Image (tube, rainbow, N blue to C red; front, side, top):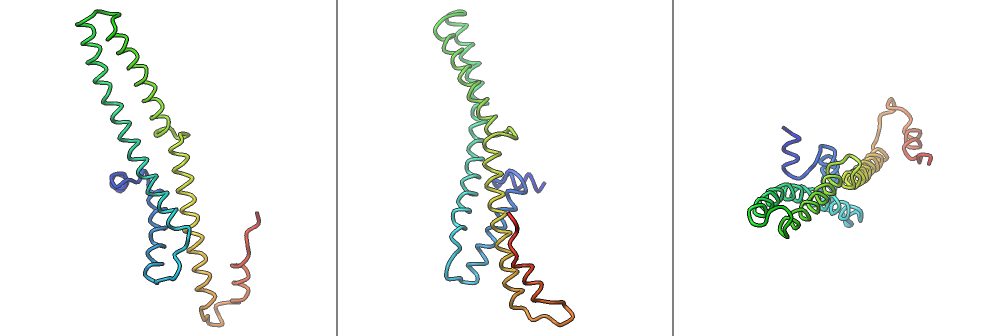
Length: 171
């Protein structure tokens, strides 16, 4: 039920929603805390997520429209058979229409439904980028808070913990 609801509001899967929710949460936190500077990365990342949702919705609309156009093709062939027989101009137009329609449907389905399709690749890249940015931001905020926290002596060596937190990963 959750996945159906997420699809209805424009998210293809839970991971896409999760990335958007994390980034939106960070943006809302910045607004609540009235930070002087909104992090420069947030608006373009939110824009990319919004554009991806729109692209996904429009692609699905196009896919459905191309499916409905098959009915027009059937009607065109019926009319052609009544009017001119097998090889008249309307029949040739219907054949050309069928070819173009088939190619368009094939391309849209490969683009939007194939696991290796471009829409899936774009979606994954945006989702991972947004999630990684949001997670790194939350980690930096947690480290900043920990740096200023007063810990009881039995909590351990705060200086050693800070050195570990400040260490950069090897690349």
